[in-house]
Image (cartoon, rainbow, N blue to C red):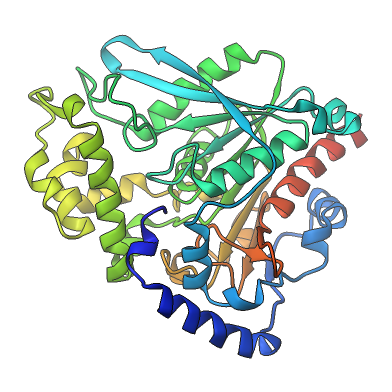
Length: 392
């Protein structure tokens, strides 16, 4: 989200912020929580203070989703310094994938009791569509998880999360598949961290990828629990209701990555009939996907492509505890995409919907706003560990 600030000037931000601060006392900060009344869900609710209290109080001058999004696009100050070890995986004709292992420069800041509790717990973080490990929310989530004692790895989409001018993007046979990429990378992560318990947090498009994987691999995935943050769920509906400003942002963000990796996109296999020149000139999402994405994924139409990407039809199949966090004022994803009835269909899914929060924002505090969503996320995952221990 580093380029969102280019779409709105600072005067607009200030004006909206002052207006939000004026009406702030009138904001109803209670959130909506949807869940089935199971033993596990009751345990989770009682163990998670942020869920139990029933409200999220946003930063007074960030009382609208658009303000949360703009503020979230700027680098957030944090004390923790993180180092990343890049792990490359060569899958031959299928291409090259990568994941990153995160470590705190100063691991002594992790309390001994937390380090002991989560010493065998590995958290896999999936990023938004064009995010990298330097994205503010990724750094924030990674740092907080490391401070909880988790081993943290970041999954990188082979095209958009990886800004390096190296690797192989196109499969020599078959087509690109995010789900297959994730499955193959996860298999390697399991080998590298044998004996660990696995949890996952997906953000935005990465949340969609995660949930689709969990549903389609309901009987054979390694995860004990997961959290979905700012998930679009239904890609077709999400794009149909996408505001022009953010449609433009999404297209330009993807075009920027393609330009950075343009040398790797030359001479694609004959069966992947992309038109890179037209994709780089596209002015909206559907035009970009018509010339690039649908061919990369091997679909005849962009609507088939959107339907295949979406996790909405797999959500009912998820068999592990899953917390979904969404905000009604998300400026990137319209609230009509949120499956409010999911807990009635699948008792494993808990849905928390705030009135304010923006897109992967949820800033709280006044002088040094920080992201709130890490609190319920990590409390939820820690509660699952506690529940497992209580059943021994």
